[in-house]
Amino acid sequence: RKEVEQDPGPFNVPEGATVAFNCTYSNSASQSFFWYRQDCRKEPKLLMSVYSSGNEDGRFTAQLNRASQYISLLIRDSKLSDSATYLCVVNTAPGTYKYIFGTGTRLKVLA
Amino acid sequence: NAGVTQTPKFRVLKTGQSMTLLCAQDMNHEYMYWYRQDPGMGLRLIHYSVGEGTTAKGEVPDGYNVSRLKKQNFLLGLESAAPSQTSVYFCASSSPSRRGLTDTQYFGPGTRLTVL
Image (cartoon, rainbow over all chains, first blue to last red; front, side, top):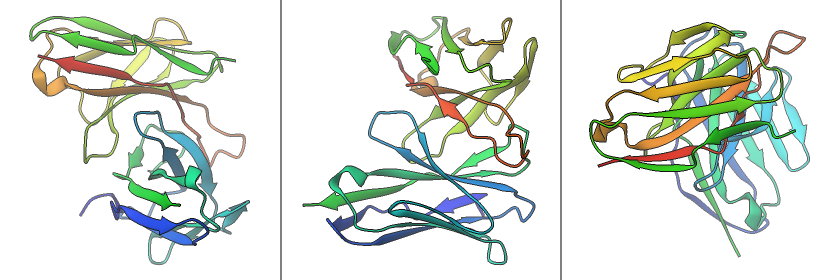
């Protein structure tokens, strides 16, 4: 089993739709979780950290489910500009190098 | 603030040639990392550094060497390039947050390397 798994997609959704991605992780000791966004041929950029209590930033909501070992990202009112690949990243030991990257979920928002 | 910069942006090498990729950050971060990204695979850690003068192996270190002589710079060397090293290379840096729980990584724009 991979340490971090994501559905590769692509998810094709119309503008204005709500879309959700899940990411599962295998190491129950993991402490820090992130969602990064990566545009085609560009570097990953932090979208949001995922806290135990869940967090929201505008149209984006991230949640953590420790019992089932997954994190989720919800995008409401999708925009064309949301089209990108979304990477799930798990830091299994905060303060160390152990960042495990998922392969990413590709989102395409259609006009 | 330039953040994390990488040079060069593109490079084509012949098998057996050597080259050095340079990463620089101006955020005074302690940690720096070199990753490679290949189609269908997540970013994989090549080498990393937790401070000036220290380096360590990551997940896929074979065929690469690194040096961190200055806190702001992290160099990745390929001594004898092979076609399997054709990839996109990303440098990143981070520092522990005050809470000690989240370490956001900041990435450079990447170097696209082709080895023929």
